[in-house]
Image (cartoon, rainbow, N blue to C red; front, side, top):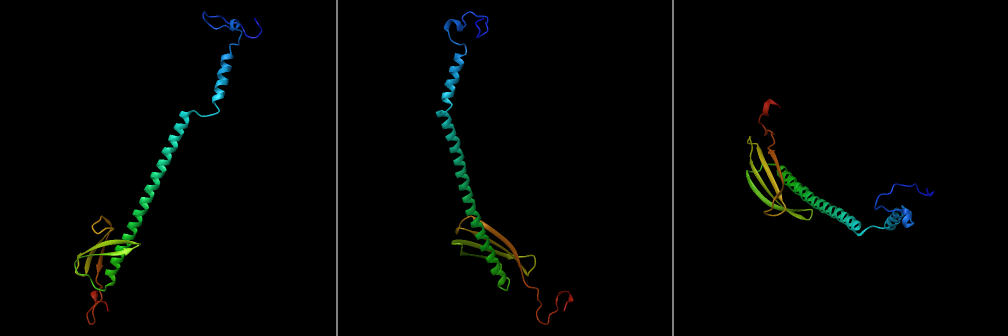
Amino acid sequence: MNGCFPLRKRHPGSFSSRESGTSPYAFQRGAAQHRAGHARGFTLLEVVVALLIVALGLAAAVELTTLAAGNAFTLQQKTLADWVAMNRLATLRMAGTLPAAGSATGHVKMGGNTFYWREVISGGALPQVRNVRISVSGKADGATLVTLQSSLAAALVPTAGAAAPGGLP
């Protein structure tokens, strides 16, 4: 024994540390030093992959923001159109008389936008009832944003001298 390394059985064609005068672990130390030298930075491939991941994430964030903004605008338009329809129905209710069967159209400005409404009034199950359907769109011939359906009834107030329904005073 030489005191440093235990003797090993030599295979034909194998490396012998005695012949070269170097340690059999010299190659491993060199590889470790080589790896340590490259551990200080990233390879170009790693940087490109990281940038690709960041770019995909940012693209998804922009897409979601655009979608959210579009949905907010649509929701605002539908809310304003609903208010237009409710205003038309309130106008019909406050008229004091039942509207005649038929249809009417018009437009009104609300929230800085012009909305186009169309109302269709039809007879109900009773002569004192009218069915009302009000559709509102953002353009004269555009798609309907909101449709409101309701019924209007004449007040069941007896005239002077007539008996109230059910014999009530």
